[in-house]
Image (tube, rainbow, N blue to C red; front, top):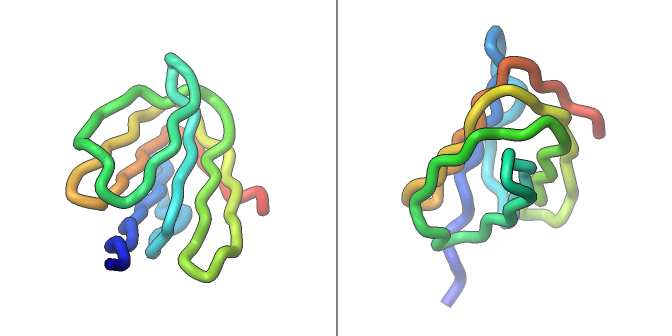
Length: 89
C-alpha cells in the first residue's frame, strides 16, 4: 500500500517560499535535525537556523535556508513558518 504524500508549506514572514507534495522533509530544530515521512506523529518544534531539505514526489530535492520560526506536523501536513526563508536550490 502506497503512503499518502506529505503536504508541505514553507512560508517566510512576508511571502510563501514553496508549497506542494513531498515524500520526505528534513529540518533543523533547536534540539537537532528531524526527518519527517508520511504518517509521522503530530508535533510542534521550534526551528533552528539551517537547511530545510524537501524531497518531492518525483525524487528531486529542494533546499531552503530558514530561521526563527516553528515547524508543525499533523495528518501528513507540514507547515514551516520562519522569520526568514529562501530557496537555495
